[in-house]
Amino acid sequence: MHSNPSLSTRLWATALWVAVGFFVLNLLALIGSVVVSSFGTRWLGTWLPAGFTTRWYAAAWQEFQLDDVLLVTFQVAFSVVILSGLLGVPAAYAMARREFPGKRALMLLFLLPLLVPPITYGIPMATVLYQTGLGGTMAGVILANLVPTVPFVILVMIPFVEQIDPRIEDAARVFGAGTFRLFVHVLTPLLLPGVLAALLLVLVRTIAMFELTFLTAGPTSQTLVVALYYSVFAAGVRAVQAVDAMAVIYMLATLVWLVIALRFVSPTQIVSRAKQQNAH
Amino acid sequence: MSATAGPAPTLRLRLAARGLDTVTLLVLPAALVILALFLYPFLYGLWLSFRPKDGSLLGNYGRFFSDPFLYDTIWTTMRLAVPVTVLNLLLALPVAFRVRLMRRQRLLTTILILPITLGTVLVAEGMLFYFGAQGWFSRTVMTLGLSSGPVKLTNSYTGVFLSLLITGFPFTFLLTLSYVTGIDSSLEQAAATLGAGPRSRFRHIFLPLLLPGLAITFCLSFVQAYSVFPSAVLVGEPARITRVISIAAYQAAFEEYDYSMASAIAMIMGFTQLAVVVAVLASRQLAYRGPAGGGKG
Image (cartoon, rainbow over all chains, first blue to last red; front, side, top):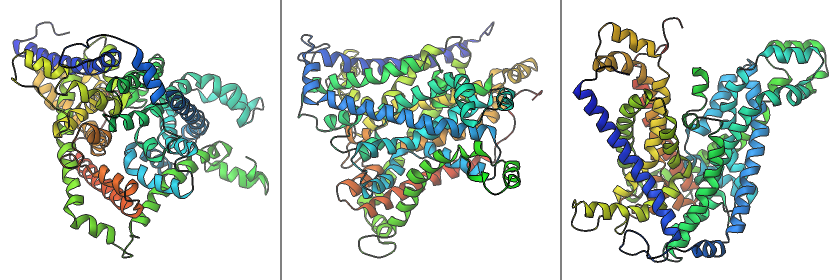
C-alpha cells in the first residue's frame, strides 16, 4: 500500500500486530484449554493432562441430562426462529415499503430492545411472566427470547427489502396478486437469502442468549447455556472435566450454526446490522 | 385484512393515501409483541417500583440510596464498565485503521466473532482454568521468569475486567471497523495529495468524521459492560469487589422475592446507563455531523 513507509510507521504497525496477536493467542488458548481439559484424565500442575479419555462426555451427558437439555435448547431456538421470522419479515416489509404516521416512533420501539441490555429489561419482564403463570415454562422462555430477535430480524431485513425493485411487485399486483400471494410467490423467493441469514443469526443468538433464559427458565425449561452456568456456579460438585465437556458440547452446538451463518453474512454484519449492505 | 372493506372505498383510499393499507398492517403483529413483552413490562416495572412492601411511594429508592451495600453497586459497576469501555475503544481504533487496509480481513474478524458468539458464560468458564493458578497463562508467565509464584487472575476485579475485555474488545472493534470502512477512501487520498501526513490525515479527516460513530460505539459497548452479570459471579468476587448492580437486582428478585425492590434496582440500572449515554451523545453534538462520503454524494 505505502511505497516507502517510515520507521515510526513500521514500528507502530508492528506494535499493533503484536497486540492483536497476543489477544488472539490468549483467546484461542483459553478456548483450547477447555477442549484439552474435557479430554484429560487428571490435570494437576503440568502443561498437559496425564492422559486422554472421552469418558467425561459420557459422564456429562448422564449427569447433566444433556439429552433433555439439548432437546429443550433446540425446541426453544427453533420456535424462536420460526416465530421471529413470521413476525419480523412482514413487519420489515411494511417498514421498508410504506410511509405512515408514527413510523419513527415504531422504529424507536423496535430499536430499544436491541439497545437496552437484556438484564435491565429482563427483570421486569420476568416479573410479568411469572405473574401471568408463564414464568418457568418453555412458552415463557420462547416469548422472552422474541424480544431481542424480532427487532433484529426487522432491522436486518429492511435493507434487503429495499433493494428489491418495487416494479416487480407492481407487476404482480397488476396481474391480480393480493398481498398474501405476493408474499408467497414473489417476495419469499427473492428475500430467501436474506431471511436465511437473519434466521441463522437468530438461531445462534438464541442458543447463546444467557440473561433472558436465565431469568425466565424453570428447572425443565433450561437451555444449554443456562445449564452450563449453573454447573460452573456449583463448582466442586461435579468433576471439572465433565463441566468442560459440557462447555465443548455447547461450543459445538453454537459454532455449527455460526459457520453456516458466516457463509451468508460477513462477521462485521453480526455486530453492526446491515451497515455493509448499504456500503456497496 | 379486510377490516376497512366495509364502509366505502373512499375511506380505504383516504387511508391508503396516508400510507395505511393492508401492507402497513403487516407491522402490527411484531409491534404488538414488542409492546406486550418489552414496553408493557418496562412501564409495569416502573409502576411496581413505586409500590414497595412498606407502602410508601419512594420506599425502594430511599432504601437503595441509604444502604451502602446497595448504592455502592453503582460505583462498583462504573469502576468496571468505564475503564474497560475506554480501553476497548482505544485499542479498537488503531487496530481497525490497520485492518481496513488488509485484503483478507475475514480470518481475523471470524476469530474475533468467537467470544461474542459463545457468550460471557463460556468465556468465564474458560477463564476459570486458563487464568487460574494452574492454568496455561500462569505457567507461561512463570516459565518466562516474569513471576516467581503462580499468577491467579480469577475471582477478583481483574478477572471480571479481563472477561469484559475478551468479550468487549471484539464487539467494539467490529463496530469501529464498520464505521472506519464506511468512510470514503477518496477523502484520505485527496488529503494525501494535498500533502497531509498520516498524523494530520487522521486528526483532520478521519477523527471528525468518525466521532459520531465512535460516540455510538462507546455507548453500545458501555451499556454491554454495565450490565455484566455471569462473569461478575463466576470469575469475580460477587460478594464484595465485583458486586455489580445486576447482582443486586437479581438477588432482590430471585432470593428475596421482592419484585418491587428488584424493579426499582432495574430502573436505577437503566437510568444510570441512560445518563451516561445521554452525556456522551450530547457531547457528540459539539462534533462535526455531516456526510462521510465523497463530494459527489
